[in-house]
Image 1 (cartoon, rainbow, N blue to C red):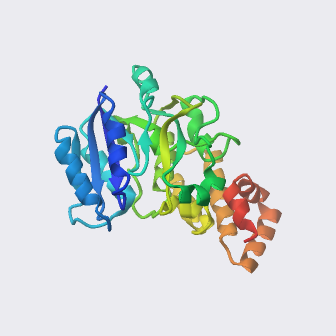
Image 2: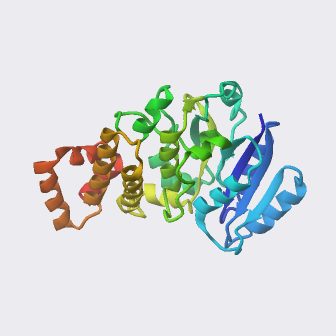
Image 3: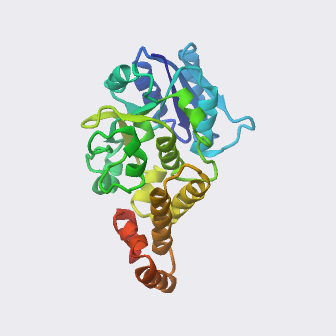
Length: 314
């Protein structure tokens, strides 16, 4: 089993060495692909040093124009240049744990398996970060709560099956051939949640199996400048970013000829619910009254989501 690990790098000079070394601990990792995305710090110099030190296993890429294109397009560049049969993902401020590929080595022996997902934990890179964000992440696992067959993963991730849980790209390993089943790689016009959009669409097209769900196989690094932590803490309004995510998913689902009607309807209702949460006060309550009278499930879809509930009365 040979694996390409894709690491997008932006403003991560303090953390990327740990990320790379955590991937290189595995004999199965044949290459680590760093995609440096015009960082404002000294991340490029750190990446150049890593590529020189580990010249046979660490590859450094930049976008053709040497510009900043975001994590989605950086991961796309990595996926297009990966040479191994299997691909794993890692953010530059996160790191793998020693059990990262234990389940994958067995599960991928079955040819029908397109991907394996596992749980990730939390690491606070500083006491200040812990003070700021511990109330959000605590020591929780990001995981799917119990094993499910592949056919249940997509409806589970979109929330159609109630309490399902989540997995992160840091805990995902896929066959490179699985990408050929998808309509597109990561959507580059989404500034946030490109990975969530990618995981949901991947789950629709590919056979994804559970790996280790009850303990972490990788760790999310939390620090003061995490963009997703800014969203989770409310400094960036979560509803507005999720309106864009669910609008993307709705547009894709409407064009997908094999999309079941109940799943399309649920995606539409989730989009509506976040539109409500992100609306001005008068429009919000007008939409609530409209959907209470015509489509109560659009409201109920949102009430299942903690981020909708946080923003409903803001």
